[in-house]
Image 1 (tube, one colour):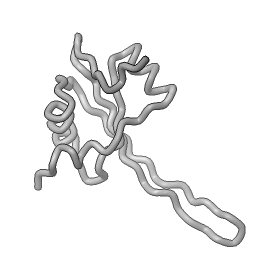
Image 2 (image 1 turned 90 degrees about the horizontal axis):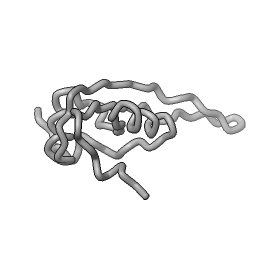
Image 3 (image 1 turned 180 degrees about the horizontal axis):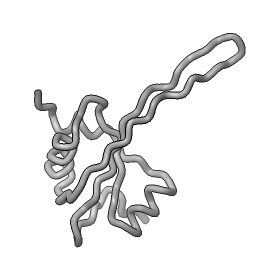
Image 4 (image 1 turned 60 degrees about the vertical axis):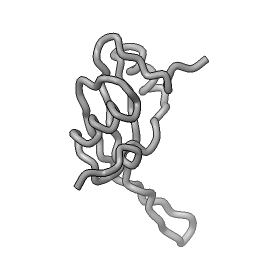
Length: 97
């Protein structure tokens, strides 16, 4: 089943570590749909963001258990994708002031 490219990439992940990766190694990070795979993520990024992607690395993180007094809950599981952009490619989304 192929998904709409706008449903695969959920939102960019902007942290200090990801900013360092962007500057040093031309990599960007996105939160992606939990059922998407590397091929879908690469196609979605190239179609939606208009950049050439060299490689895709995926990180699955399990949600933490949290307690507030006697009540217990669980944070959501996340799937992150680190996209390595080809030489000379820039993503205007991350180029800020």
